[in-house]
Image 1: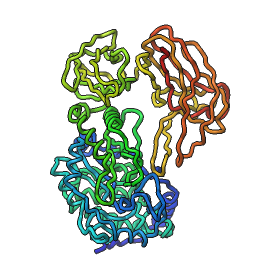
Image 2: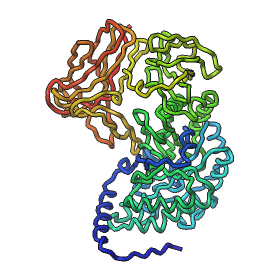
Image 3: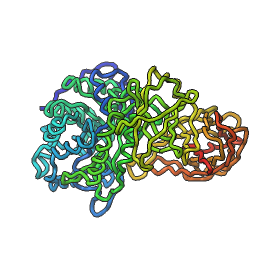
Length: 604
């Protein structure tokens, strides 16, 4: 039975209709990335601690789009496979026909849950309904679901929820609350329906809310309800939407993409990692290959090393990694996802102590890697072994109790030099994914130590000064740029932008060079046509080095943003110590470039 809503007239109605009209116009103009919302409410949910401790989640995008596998009428599509209905502008009636042959008989809930367990996953979130509008569960609200519209005739969500909980993991549902390309009043189908004539409130009232209530009533306790691309509701309406669902499962966490800053934790953009540590609960979500939904011709899978380092990086900044896999239309998870997840799990079996239940690292990111924290412990995640075998922990003015390898607990020799700790590393493979050491100490590490100069060492092939750690003056500022490779294959790069005035605009890096010698300095940047051939100046150690900017391409968030690595100087550093590296335009003009990083390479 549909809910009956009675509305009475009052004097505020004309204003309400005016604002709803503006809201609809805004929604129509939004692109996918503009519909993300990474704001949380700021009120800590009483059930948030399990999420903070979990660190590693598994995202599963599985729907009718998986059956199509990135192809429609002989044409291959690249990027986000779950967007194929939108990209191919498939009419609703034709898309419904595709469901008649969707029969995932190879789906095995216990195998999926066991894989997640083997991988070291702590929570699983699966798409119950994506933007295509097709429900992967037995819905009484719509017949466009896996039970009514396909020959499969079973509810895989019920089976998976039970299997995941049996393995001791939290279970949650993804639900696209606004975009629904199948429903005449759902958001963003402009090829079948006139967007300006849609009644979003009717859609929420008749489909989205009833289906969410089904999910929160019929599938047991949900750790997470993961919303996506909010729209069509004011903040007040979104609060009412949230409150109506909270009644059913008050312990469930709602992701920030519920909209208007009303989520319980922050979800960053697709495949986005914050540049610096973030307070509060948050999550980075990444695809395993280039697409969320299954594409048969997408074979660009992230290696176990990449997954492990992404996981460590997220934990070092205080957050979680939720890695996505896209099962195919038969119900099988791609073989590389199975293999690489299990390899990640083997690493976690040995090193999980350095990930689960940790907080952000108290030692700033170093040329060798990152750190995570537990009381009295710093976990040193070494990605790059220093050539001299000595690991520098700079400005760690605390009483060290001992240092040892996490795997095998081998105690290591170390010594204090000023406020630095220097650790003698044991031999380990130069291509190791992530070798973890534990530094146990007494006392609290003050937060201002994270403001220490960036380390530049001759013991590494390359030292990267990321834009996020720059200091800026004038109109120069730090900005996160979003762009894409394939459709929906979003990338994010933090850059210094806005340097245009030779007198007032400047970028500065405070660095500490630990070994004297010759260094090559390289600027990594993107430069638009109007910014090319401008003169800039880099200063360090009382020396000025001039360069001209090189054109790399225009910035369009729907296209790749190309960066060049331009060598601009060779500098002799006569003594170790602290230095200031400055970059600025020589004269007034256009923006100099979008600076991603400064690289310093020792010359042997």
